[in-house]
Length: 248
Ligand code: PGA
Image (cartoon, rainbow, N blue to C red):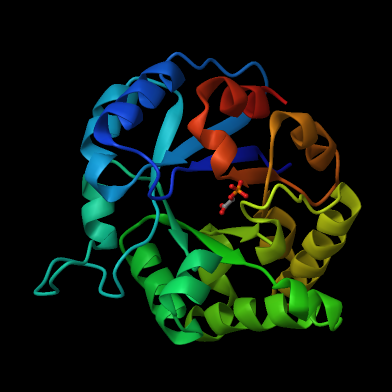
């Protein structure tokens, strides 16, 4: 039985006072059903949010980490070890905004994934196709290639302690959600790629859907057999909306 996981990605959207306000509202969250909840604030606000959420059920994640796991001379970077040190359990790896806007390669993403595992964090590795790739019928091929790059680096065992997030690029921040059936089809394809390398890891890995998730579409997504949770961007900035998704 896979536990449901709901993760809020605050991206580069908050000031310190907004992050504090949001964290204070989330700190009162009491899950009614079995659900793990985490938020990924901007790096600058991690210590503040960690302090506010310390005694709550909401866990913490980073939005990215350096390719080097530990401490070292690497100006401007934040390592997985530093994220762990500030109280993170999770870290997002390979979000499409980093792949496409920042230009992170599959090789860099695989290194970051390895660094996260080495530091004892749970990487949430994000995969997803663009609209053009979907139109060309390449969606499964694209996400398989993105996953393979990670599997090649660490072996399928590396995915043992990881989470996968399927986030179609065309659904991120656009208000267009993949239908529950479209998402389920992709989640099943992702699971079967992992199952073909390891049945137990494939059966147990949590696969999240991300892309314009709201309280109004979460329950339908959760009803799908291979959707184990959601990665929420815009709607995670509204505490009531995010908590309604968690309760869904
Ligand atoms: P969105 O973002 O919910 O605003 O579409 C999701 C994400 O980028 O993780």
